[in-house]
Length: 354
Ligand SMILES: Nc1ncnc2c1ncn2[C@@H]1O[C@H](COP(=O)(O)OP(=O)(O)OP(=O)(O)O)[C@@H](O)[C@H]1O
Image (cartoon, rainbow, N blue to C red):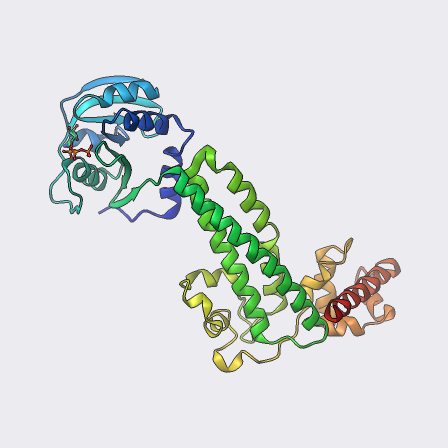
């Protein structure tokens, strides 16, 4: 039995079928000619074993050629990279023992051939005007580009709203950090927002892959809207190590379902902050995210400062003389840090007053 299809493999094959590719062009020509087709991607020994009849062509792939060959009865076998047309008019005889819920001989054959050979098989239905990709027991009907574009746009719009909310939340968290009033709930809220953005980003990537050349714009928007979010996540994790001391990771949130991601207690537990009773527990930031705002202060110095002083509150309390005790910090840098910290505190208080 073949292994289940992972997202990456599915994406790779959807990309081969995306608008803008020669293969998709050929398939679209078949559809507009109101014929169907059965196309196997890969001329391996297993594919040969389920094939009878047909004739050898072995020519470079050309969309119009595919369309011509689809007018004939039988399947068309392409090379695995879809760069060559190998055979046409092939009768496929897969083992009927492979389970399939498809109706219609073309789709049933496609499903079974893919399960038996492990190769992707595309079934183009004339009656339904659909393109279906079968991949080792996984079935994926390709959506129309307008539908995919609509979904991609909706995901991007939602990402835009989430990004605005994200920065409202980081600003608020900064204020609480400076006033030393952070609770588990605040950290959980930001982690939740970051994971929601990550999910929307992954969803949009899926649409972008399927959209091929039509996905350029949503892809640019997605990149812009997710920029910097991974870094915020990394700094958040560094700022709030859970009490157990185990190194937490926002990636662990990926295991939660969409419904579970709405439950703060569950997020807190997943991040190592205990359950319900801990949501109001006080936390104190180490200060990595805040120090990252001080331009010209390399991250290595932030880490050294935090290792020395313990957390942001102690850093606020540090005098120039205290700062000079840290290895590699001279007078210039100590002044830069003091000024930077003062600016951070001021900005936060003026935000709170707004
Ligand atoms: N085992 C097979 N090997 C090769 N080609 C096949 C096989 N089974 C079906 N086909 C191809 O599928 C065509 C029609 O199959 P099927 O009866 O499932 O389609 P349909 O339901 O009439 O049409 P469509 O799928 O286009 O809506 C056949 O003419 C043949 O070209």
